[in-house]
Length: 379
Image (cartoon, rainbow, N blue to C red; front, side, top):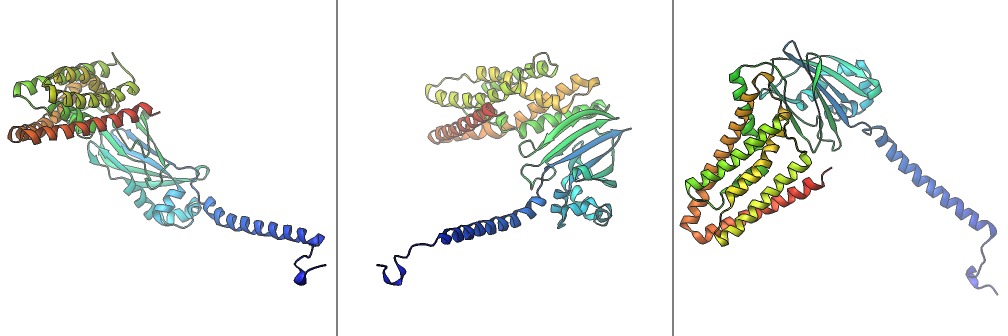
């Protein structure tokens, strides 16, 4: 007997088919909605997140070309449809805004001064969905060039390919992205001796002050203080060592891989931190030996920067000496800023001074260890 209300009613043969149809319809509606939401985004997606920056020196004049993707240009110029820029007439009507985008993003320096480009012709490159912008400048015979990138940092995977030419010959190539954000290069242009000295002294100073690993190593050498002669001996040992390897590596007599040099520099920081903690309690001082040993390693690091920067063929010795002088000036500034402070604290408040040295040494060890692991595991 069937219960009232149909509680025991058996399903009809067509019920399951109708439920299947309804389920398929629901799935179809969900997929259609998802595609409707995703397709516009896919249409505007950045399938080629890169740009090209060509810098040329012809007859001493600095000029070049920047090629940028329409998606990046439209994003920065607040244009709703990127592919509308593939229409030359539309691009021409918005040329002022697009040139402003390139001008504000092209962070190019010549001999330490910003380059202000003057834009000329443009060209639509449909195959790459890009626009190329020609530019010129008032800069003549630059000795050094520096560029920050990538061109469009709003886009994490964006890459900027950099090509530098001198009289039609490719002299430097580089790739700027979110990990490698700046490059500096020598142009090989002939220059006066005074210009060589000034350029490379400043380059040496700049390299020390933008390199926290070198700064921490020097600070580590100074933590325990000591007499003027003791500090002079330590700094001289470091200077002598890195001068030797700087010359050998720059002249390519000895040329170890950066995959060995960079982790070894980080290891030197860990070592000087540990030595400081040991010496603090055992009253020993091996800093001069450590400074010389690892100074050899740091010299290879300095040389890699100097080679990338570019050495003038007619004044290589002056450039090497000037760069090394710049390094020494920067180190002297660190010594004068750090050593008196630690010496004063340890003299006036020995307990507090020892604690300050201990904490600083631990920070140096932690930083060096992080860099060591990072550089050892880097591709």
